[in-house]
Image 1 (cartoon, helix red, strand yellow):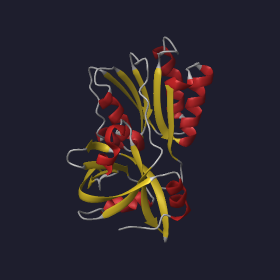
Image 2 (tube, helix red, strand yellow):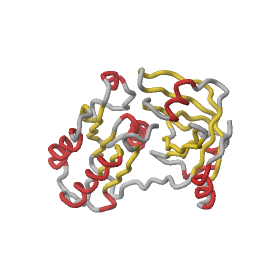
Image 3 (tube, helix red, strand yellow):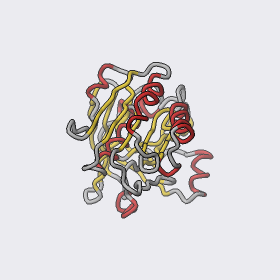
Length: 246
């Protein structure tokens, strides 16, 4: 169902954002706190063409308390030929999670594509250094999929016991996964303690991180200012803010 997009929608339209409507074709609960919803793309993937890229996200519109709310979600397993993809929702309180919990075949949501982009690291790193959490897991997976022969160390912040069952596409032969229970600054502390040993040369290292905005900001500053990684070798994205809902 189409919803008004308020002032944010006006701004995105001025920035030449393109609007699409997605239709639900199915859904499944991965865990009690994580749900995957499948869609037809409303022409999005054909329009994206060659610009389709790892970690690609779109702005999705949800209605709550009579107002439009915009949330960003990563495309999971986009299939341009079939015109299908999925979203994965780390469930908590918020308009997006409320919608996802009851999403059924035939339901629709509107989305705007504007601002997404990805530049592959050049030169390619010998090892990916990835920091994320359940909200950014789809992007983490797409990054690993895009570098199938590259070893990676992944720090994954977890909140629930069932997060051990989340669909992280890790290969034990190539990927070193380090799970960190969410508790204060535990993730920041763990990364600061362990990541330097994996950076032989700041000029060739590559770190991709997407956590809550405060954690992302703290770690990005640490990587740039203390470890000396060049700007183009750190890709940091603040995926969510505590208390804003999702």
